[in-house]
Length: 445
Image 1 (tube, one colour):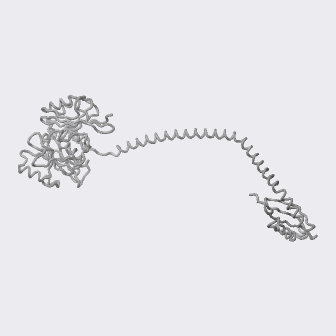
Image 2 (cartoon, rainbow, N blue to C red):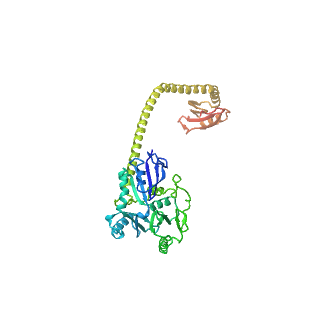
């Protein structure tokens, strides 16, 4: 799906250069949608017939942007240097100086202002203006062909070349010589932020006046003498080298088609210059333009998150309800099993007691017989308790210590001792409690 469509046009006296580009969701590519023509080419012929011929080849379309570049000799350019101020203040300052800066009455010209912030923070302004009577025929062609709303820029070719050089990341600042459609040429000084200076070189290239003026411009922008570049080979300047990394492999070079330079001013975010009678405009960042989309995006995210959360909560409640029903059903099924389990536990405990009793019964008979044999006469036991291997006896006798000594002598017992105190009745009988451990019997855990 096409989301942007740009067309760059360079209109010179004897030929028209054009290049179209569209941006899809994934990438840029050369194209002029809806037109049965090459996306990039040169139309020979006299202006303005070539411009009318090109515009008639494709139908008007909303969303399309056309950028038109014209040779420098159709414009007048004055440069103004300002201190480090915001661009908004620089615009107001330059506008107040327009009657003095422009050598023609303001009613007779179309003008725009190009700003470039220098590395030291200062602002360099180029006041670009042209006669209305020379620009109106070009604007009339766009209006007559239905492309008036698509025209988004009308500027000197040098501004487009600067945008192309900046995007290709050439070393800046750079002094650049641009040949015109007549013997005159243009000297432009570029910084990374745009064109900082433009000078028309009239008459012979090597005349003393021109040479002195060029040296003065180079010195002003701290460029060494002889550091001039151009699109064509010449003895007076260096040919433009290839970029270290071609960042525009999908476009031809500006040496092949100057329409690429016109296209570059629209593609790469530089200030757009449009000499059509509208007031100069600069791009100003408004915080609300970022704040409102951020709020909208956050609202959408929160709404989606809330809806998903509500759905998740609803699913969770339904799952919990289903689990509760399943638990209740399981509990109802388990109640009879629990009763059976408790009965089995009681039966198991009773069975263990019976097993212990059966296992210890012969031993207990022997123990009681041994106790009866060892204790002295007159000894009575009123209570006996067996816990595992430990036997507790309560009774009465005339000599409790003698009973303890007698039982200790038996090989069947160990750890025989009195438990608690011994009480003596007036009749001489002692009440006592003793404990002993049966040998070779394991205690219950």
